[in-house]
Amino acid sequence: MEINSNLKRVLDSKKFAVTAEIGPPPSVDSKIIKKKANMLKGYIDAFNVTDGQTAVVRMASWATCLIAKEEGLEPIVQMTTRDRNRIALQMDILGIAALGIKNILCLTGDHISFGNHPKAKGVWDIDSIQFIRIVKDMRDNKQFESGDKMDVAPELFIGAAANPFADPFEMRIKRLSKKIKQGVDFIQTQCIFNINKFKEWMEKIRDLGLHEKVKILGGVTPIKSIGAAKYMKNKVPGMDVPDSIIERLSKVPKEKVSEEGIKIAIETIQQLKEIEGVYGTHIMAIEWEEMVPEIVKSAGLYPRP
Amino acid sequence: MMGQAQKPMPEILESLEGKEKVVIMGCGGCSTVFHTGGVEEVDIMEEILVKEGKDVKKITLPFAVFACYKPFSSMFIEKHKKDFKNCDAVLMMSCGDGLQTVRQILDEDMDIVKPFYPAINAMGVSGGGPSKFMEKCQACGECVMGRTAGICPLTECAKGLLNGPCGGTRTDGKCEVDPEKDCAWYLIYERLKKIGQYENIDNFNEPHDWSKSVTPRIFEREPLDIHKHLARTKKVIESLGI
Ligand code: SF4
Ligand code: SF4
Image (cartoon, rainbow over the protein chains, first blue to last red):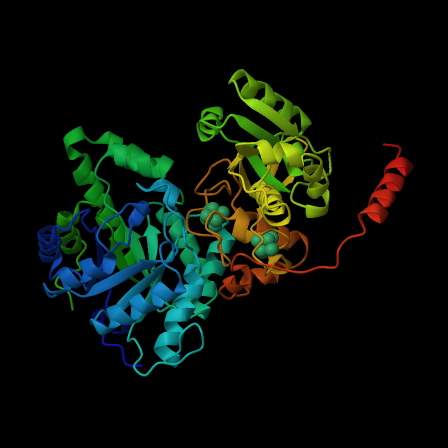
């Protein structure tokens, strides 16, 4: 199927792709979405919108995507299997595809116990790998999970997440190859702070030839403060923030910490550009979207193709 | 067994407010193992309710006599028919299965219709003991453990993932949700290696067939010859010198 996705176009042209994350508002405030979208316009190839990240209620990813899309940006809708069963997910896929969204990121989702509605019931009727297969079947075989057929299939570029840092390391490669086997087109990784471990992961991926089967975008998060770095290190499961990063931030005067955080992010992107098999970067500037243009420019990725 | 814990006493008392004559019934099965409805617990409950000024009749089931098995519980209910008839409420010290089995016997076989209150919360199919238990099975009706090294991912993984682990596994192999618990998929991975089925980790597990657990599931079985089985148990116990 011909997929008319800008992200796919950039990746296929072998240009280093740039995506960034927009956090949706915990309200109906569409102005803030438009503001964030306009900040990013021209600096990225596509933007993600998180889907109830950390299990906190915010505007739905698909709705935020559509609002920001009006500003002329290309959305990547994120969908987790935490809140919807296979029926709801497939209905939403038909809807988003009909409304012109071309990219989807299939996720399992953060556990409910982390969020602001800890009494809610988790769904997890399916997991992210099964979800990838369902979207691919819908797209390529015009087939629902039930086996029923449809007339017009959703035109979607299928993405998923990968965490090179969670344990067991070997299992992380296996999970990625499972995702590839089920039909994932692109991968956005967990935030990379431990670049050496990421390089090790990429080496294993190249050994297996997986880098030729999927487009990997390395995740980058600029650190705002030492507190944020320590929080990510100690409190966010699956995050790997080496002590060297915290030391580096501790060495600069307090008012320069965020500047240093941006510098680290830019350096990380520059290193990512040199790694064989890395096709782009995904910038997750959490509640700090205004820094994305500077990061993109300083990393030598502006203007966008 | 059905894991369980007693409800907080204030909640129990609140549910019995205005009920003067109360029948308490325990269970000799799981509720005895979990100390929620054994002989001792029923005695304690009786004492508390009497102190609260209630007129209490109690029914205790000896060990291994399950409240949820009609042939067992109906024998005891039959003996206390009068108490049930006269009471304002029944406080059931068993899981929800026991409560409903007893309620049904009264409703349908004896035409005694009374309000029932649970004294405990059931917490899932759990194994282990004598003191530490863990939920092990969701009774999903479609067991997958042949593919997952004898570890149930639907229960032991906080997200019930069939193609895990998720991206949150901690560096020490613990679950992202609870640093005290092992990540189920970490355990599955390690155990598959040990039993020589490491390649299973590459297999794609299809979406689960939840149609097998549409509730309530109803089945029919040949009735058990209780006397034969009890005699057999007695023999085995004697031969083991217990
Ligand atoms: S797969 Fe189903 S039946 Fe088997 S242990 Fe898990 S919940 Fe129980
Ligand atoms: S860490 Fe492991 S057990 Fe916990 S939710 Fe993730 S996959 Fe499941």
